[in-house]
Image 1: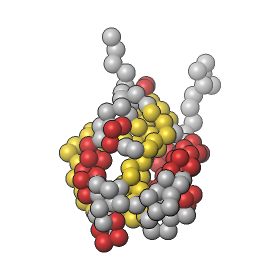
Image 2 (image 1 turned 90 degrees about the vertical axis):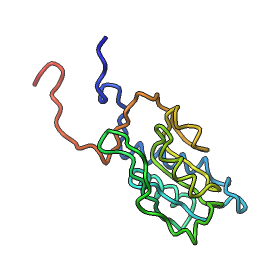
Image 3 (image 1 turned 120 degrees about the horizontal axis):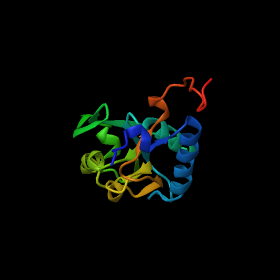
Length: 166
């Protein structure tokens, strides 16, 4: 049996698709914050969570937006996650009323580290894999654990040769 390369079991996400999915995430979260349905702040997990967090914050009219930086990948190899930049903890506190947004939960190890810092926060991702899904309260699309998601910021447009040649 031949083991497929990551791009052979890939899920390609365009900017348009990411925007639609992030808006769908916002719609799902609308009215579910603890303050009469509102959220106090959005914290994006950098780098992948920044684009969806911006869209979610816009759609939900949340003006307080911050980031938490967790390094857990070296290219396509997962490493031990570590926080390299914290949000303003005076604002986010234990996370109550805070919406943490990321593009994807894979194994859930990154979110374990983040949730330990803000245990009262609500975690939302656009995409979820089965191993990490227990770390997320809200998500839009589930993909299999062995699927590699190609996000638009990782891709470049280029010419592709037709199947039958030029």
